[in-house]
Every structure is written in C-alpha cells, then in structure tokens.
Image (cartoon, rainbow over all chains, first blue to last red):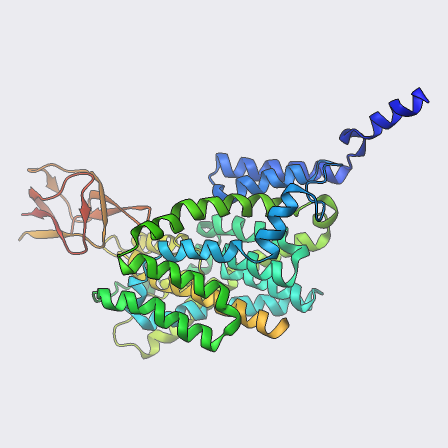
Amino acid sequence: MDHNIISEMIYSCGIFNLSFGNVVMWIIGMILIYLAIAKKFEPLLLLPIGFGILIANLPLTDLMKPGEGLIWRFYHYGLQWEVIPPLIFLGLGALTDFGPLLSRPSLIFLGAGAQVGVYITFFCAKLMGFSLDEAAAIGIIGGADGPTTIYVTSKLAPHLLGSCAVAAYSYMALVPIIQPPVIKLLTTKEERQIVMKKSRQVSTRERIMFPILAALIVILLFPPSAPLMTMFMLGNLFRESGVVERLSGAAQNELMNIVTIFLGISVGATMDAATFLRPQSLMIFFLGAFAFASSTATGVIVAKIMNLFLKDKINPMIGAAGVSAVPMAARVVHLMGQEENKKNYLLMHAMGPNIAGVIGTIIAASIFIGVLK
Amino acid sequence: MGCKVLAPMVGKIVKIKVKVGDKVEEDQEIIVMESMKLETSIFAPCSGVVKEIKVSEGDRIEEDDVLAIIE
C-alpha cells in the first residue's frame, strides 16, 4: 500500500513524464528568448512566445487543457474567438500615418504587387503537399504582417498557428538580411540611385476621409476583411480626427500592450512537442523565407513596370517595402538608397507602399478566407 | 556659392556634428535625425563653411525646414 502511494507520487511528478521532444522544445523556446533579449529580435512577441513554448512543454500541467487550462482560456477567448488580432489592428490604425500613401495614391499598386508572392507561396505549399487551408496560412506569411498571419492561421489551420506565427515574426526581424540581396538582384545601380520627386502635402480633410472611405470600399469589395479593416480604420480615425487623443493613445499604447501579452503567451503555448516537432514545421520555415523573398521580388517588379508608364520615375526599391513589415521594410529601402546616393531620402516614399502593403495583406487574407471558409 | 541644408522629412534632430565656422565638404555627415524610429544622417549638400545652425538637438522638424546654412 505504502509502496503504491510513493510510486504514484513519483509518477505524478512532471519530470518522469518528460519526453525527449519536450526538451527539444525547451531549447527552441530558450533560443527565442535569447534572440529576443540579446539580439532584440521582435522582443515584444518572441519573448512571450518563447516563454509560452517552455511552459507548454512541462508535462501534466493542464495549462493548455481545453475548457480548463489558464493559457487555453487566453487562447480560446483571444484567438479562437478572433478578438486579439482585430484589437491589435485597432492599435496599428492609431499608430499609422497614412500621409505618405495619400500623397501619392498610385503607390497602392506596390502594396498590391508585393502580395503576389503570397499567392506564389500558396501554390508552392499546395504542391509540397499541404492542404489548401494550410497553404493559405503559409502563403500569408509572405505578407510580412504578424497579426494578419495569426488571424488567418487561427481561422483556417489552427494546428499550424505556432509555426506560422514564429516564422512570420522571425523573418520580420530578418527583413534587413532577406530583402537586400533580392532587391539588388532585380535592380540596376542607376535605378537604385533614382531620387524621387517630393510628394505633395496631404490635408487634414483627406486624412480624416481616408479611414472612412477605405473601410467602406474595402469591406464592400471584400466582406471577410471586415473584422480587421473595421478596427484598423477605426483606430486611424481616432488618430486623424484629433478630437479623441485619449482613445487613440489607449488603442496604441495600453490596449495594444495588454493584448500583445496574451497573444504572445497563447501562440507560444500552442507549440507543444507533439504538434510542432514534425517535418512540416521545417517546411513552413523554408516556405516562409521563400514567401518573404518572393513578395519582395514581386513588389520590385511591379515598381519597375510602373516606371514604364510614369513620367517622374519612382525608385523601384520602394516596391520591396510593399511587404507590410512596417516600418522595417521601408527602413531597409531607405538605407539601401543612401548607400547609393547620400542625398537620397527614400524613407517617406517607401512608407507609402509599406502601409499599402498592410491593407494589401488584409485583402489577400480575406480572399483566402472568403474562398476557403 | 552657399547652400541651405533642408530637412528631408519630418522627424527629430538627434545630433549636430558641426559647429558654426566649421569647414565642411560636400556629402559630409553634418546632422543625425530620427524619423520613424530610424536614425538617418543628413549630408552637406555643398562644400563650404557653416554660417548658421538653426536647430538644436532634440528639436522637432518638418519637411523642408532650414536646418543650417553653408557658405
């Protein structure tokens, strides 16, 4: 009798239920925590995600047990109910200055151009044996937009949430490494030296009208984009209206920070050894990098095509900023421009396609959801 | 021939690397500014002597503000 109680006590200890996979996941979690702290790789997300991975791989905790676990509740009410990504978009809307896009609306084509890579990757993933739903979630990584990736994946392929989110956020941190070679390959030195004409001033009235009209038009055309677009444009209306600074501030600071905490820990906790340690996770990381590179490429190519028709040439590098990754992609383009010509300041010009890319990715996502759901 | 150093975009002055009276060469880094959380250098548009610096570190600047005059 006594013997049984003792052995039961021993076996109810987590340590005796540990699998080799759990330990591998700990290492992955620790690597993410290390990269977040030491290398400042998207620390706001990779830090809680890394910790989430650690605790999700402690046996017998029930943290992710459906209906009971603490983190499961965050995951269920935050992500499965599709609440957190739209709330993040509220904050992003309040943070985003659409001025650079409004001053040259034709740049929206570049934001669209960079989404072609999403579809190329979608077809590649399908060919590699992923289901349509999974392929859509993987393709959207190429949009380089974290919350949209999480939104699409949790809707279409929730079992891939961890890998797709980690791929999206790690590659976003790697934008300065992934993009420059692709941009250089597709542009000539002369093209990279193009100094762009100054963009026109944007009036307050235009800035206020934009979120209202954009919400109406995009949601009318692509109804599944409604949750993300509504919140994104509401946040931007808060910002531009100038009369609700408190709401705008709360959306971009307090609220955004709060939901980011729950987002990070829940995404990390979906990555237990059994769901993550599969060959398909490696394929997702490979396809994710491919998605980033091909979106960069198609953005640049669309910019070069536009130049065939434009009198005032645009610097084709800004096409690369059409992947959302705001504002990293725009910064990369700016720095590459200054490398070629010190008096070239492309940052604001690159912000146009950069923010157009966010809307582009939302639209690409809503097309997937509309067709596949 | 002198020239004006104009702000290339909105942002904040982080560091001013020259003083009034300094000789500068074209394309020499004279001011560091910050925009969209990116520090970026402003280079002298022409060679000459710094005649006037119109901003100080920490100032917010708008596009096309005159930052300095080189003569």
